[in-house]
Image (cartoon, rainbow, N blue to C red; front, side, top):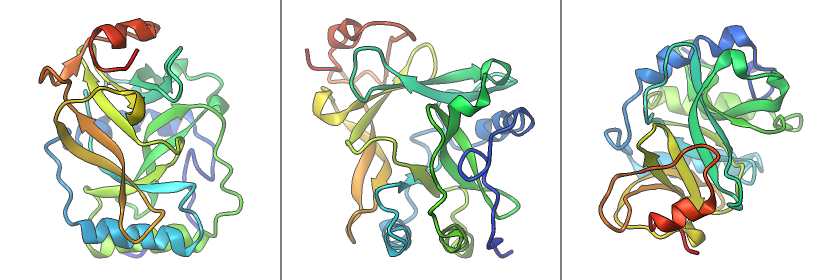
Length: 238
């Protein structure tokens, strides 16, 4: 299979549709759950980063470990939204596709090479569309072909860099995750690196899945909670 040189990628260079989104959840639930998936080789991460830099896109895209967190209910997809009062913070949780209105307020965030050999999003963010008009279409083909040539479809994918900061991610008891800028977080054991920046030949950790300092793997946190809750749980600096 060879990647198409002119891919249509929903949520990146094409609009999201409800029909597409309703097909995402079942596939997402079949992904390996973090931290069961593992990095096949840092050499592959470096090579994909090199392709990204070759096209001058290192500030727009990074490389991401393909995985899931809490399985999403039928008719839902994982969507990240800003955390009130936490600069750069994100709460990722299942959201009903029918509630995502208008769809123009949502975009793709993490993209996996699908069975058709095309990048397709499986996690989303609420926010403005990605301006990918200047991206050379050959980039998508070269990035995708590398993944398929090395059978990395279920291991590595493309991530839109919505933050320039390093982030840490905690699982939530209620499902989903909370992501906090690393400089603002109080972390325990690093469980797994799940995202890399592509700014240099040596891939730099961009996102890390972590435990709390008490060893807990999950935190209690609900959408709409205040920054005080994260501080009280000892995962964020006051």
